[in-house]
Length: 230
Length: 327
Image 1 (cartoon, one colour):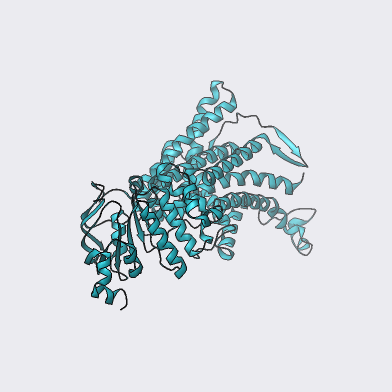
Image 2 (cartoon, chains in turn orange, purple):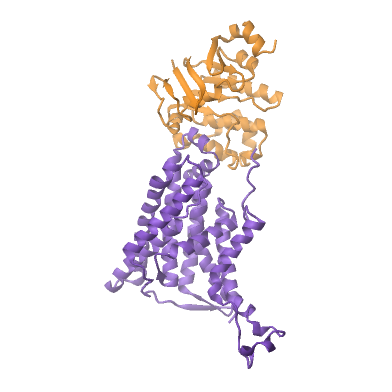
């Protein structure tokens, strides 16, 4: 297993956001984590990469316990998160954003990313905050790829985007996975996520209530009712 | 002699030093939203260390320029150590505390440093030995001394160097990235603690040089000099837009010029005898006398008038952007 989460618990003051979940991802898998607003999906991702401290539980990545590893050490190990709301550096240029993605390796060549995202190549000197939402999401993905990730944690990459752009972003996620990058995709767009992923987890008020093959989840009546609007 | 040009030259000299000090305020504010009130004290310590070294070496018969350079070279590491320590010991533990806590801590650090300086260097005004022979050049009716030229050259070189560091290097980009979004900067592998420490260290090194220049320019140093200099540089940073690096440079230079022009003209403007309606009623004016309300000793007031005006009419400063319209 590339990522193994055991009994992870996250608290905010007195509120338990993540209630002791187990989650695992094998090398090369594309796994999605779906659930309603406030189910604890983002907290789970943040706890995995150390942005927030977990109350208890362990996170093992590539066999190594990273539960207490400082945030900035994880990109060097190939674990990168693209945060909700994209988190681009709005006042830096596109090129500078990409350079920061390569920070962990002491610099890298953005050529491959410009090839993948021609729109970014055209705008490399532009201030990132002036890009459209979809372009910003592309930049966030490109920047994460600059770290040469082994495991990519994507938090709601489709949020707030126009339907055309959502399709485009999911295609990109598919391509990135096809190139061998392991992906944990958090989404509210459950149908698109389950169609893309091989396996899925369903999270409800801090716990994982369902898990399995994505196709099986798509057919599961509970999932269909609660998340697919049927 | 042309008062206007003369005062612009004097203001430019003082202003370039303010600008270098203001960079220390604005860089730290930009990255952790803290007004580091102890920064003025770092400048003071720079001047004091340089004084000690210059005073000790002055009789040794070394070339005067070498003595001043050695003084500066000793001040920089001391100030860097002070800057690094205050971040590590006083501010880092409060990184996630409510904003008032580090602010009050900064005032505390300032008091501690001031009193340490008092213990080491006494409460007296220390006079720098005037070892560098100053030559004066005349341009268009105004005088500029070789020391002023040196100060201008050093300060503008420092500002240019800092601009290159911040806008052209990996560390500088990491600093700007951390300032904008520390969480994501961490996710990209940037050790934000190191970047923040580097910011303090760079600001302190600039402050050290400013202290040495200020001390040699005015020829005086005292343990309290950091407060007034610090407040002026802080005003300069606010004038330019706190957190904005080009703003601090512009603000510093402008503030210096405003202050010098103010000091140069306030005596004439408040000389009641120069007003025809008032002159006959004032006894002192008889026979070409003067009755001056405010003299050039009111110089310091101008910096704070500027600060108040900026806070009232343009709180974001000249180059600062309005906060809160992030995409």
